[in-house]
Figure: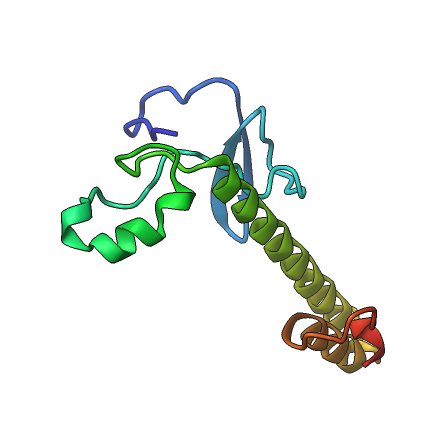
Length: 135
């Protein structure tokens, strides 16, 4: 979203708020509340600088699966789905951290236990079928 010059009218259709002292805004269709669905919107267009196969043929060929065009400008649906899964995991991790921080802020004695459970859930790969919160 382009930011208008100082004194110019702002675009209509945006939501505004102050968050930790900073002014934030968002288009109405996304809103200011974060949910699993709006945490990361996938754009199929690659944001990497343009490069060509001649620069590094091995790397170019190994990344072929993640692009749907020969020029590596648009990501494939398979890549987008993998990225979406990573974003969902990141959202869950961020949500757990917010829970830990809010638990600590409330002065709960369970803070250390919650912190340990959350760190184990993220950092330890449990055996198949084992609940990481019981480790």
